[in-house]
Length: 118
Ligand SMILES: Cc1cc2nc3c(=O)[nH]c(=O)nc-3n(C[C@H](O)[C@H](O)[C@H](O)COP(=O)(O)OP(=O)(O)OC[C@H]3O[C@@H](n4cnc5c(N)ncnc54)[C@H](O)[C@@H]3O)c2cc1C
Image (cartoon, rainbow, N blue to C red; front, side):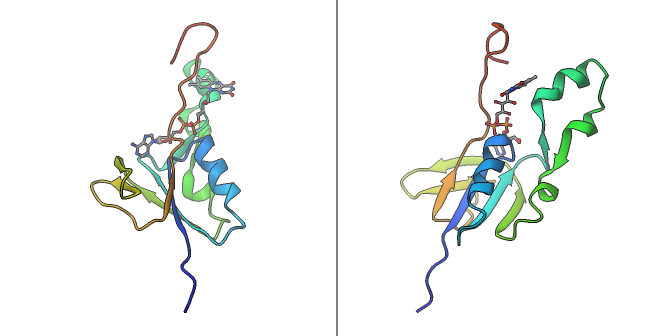
């Protein structure tokens, strides 16, 4: 009987989520990466956009493009609307992609230069 391949849903395409996908690169897991945006935003360069040193396009990269070399990832554009802990399911627009696990580093609050969370 064939072994079941673990499927992991990773929420977001930020630094945390991309690092999680990379960490699973050489595992037999199938990864479903879900983000409500189609691009990764390099947040540390937002100041340079705000001051017109860079254009928004220079700090955004398509998530599919970043992960295109990684064969075990499928990228989905969608809003995660819920987490059902009991059933171990992540809901994307009310539906649950079939998965046996989930990783959710979808946005870290930070405190910058003493100005509090941004
Ligand atoms: C102006 C600025 C400057 C910074 N400078 C630095 C720095 O110099 N050094 C440093 O270490 N850190 C810096 N940070 C902080 C750093 O960028 C964040 O800590 C880091 O981006 C957090 O990564 P993350 O993966 O947790 O979340 P994010 O990078 O915020 O990614 C979250 C992703 O999840 C997606 N998402 C969220 N909710 C949902 C949902 N419900 N459904 C689907 N998708 C969803 C979002 O679309 C997003 O793509 C800075 C932040 C800012 C704003």
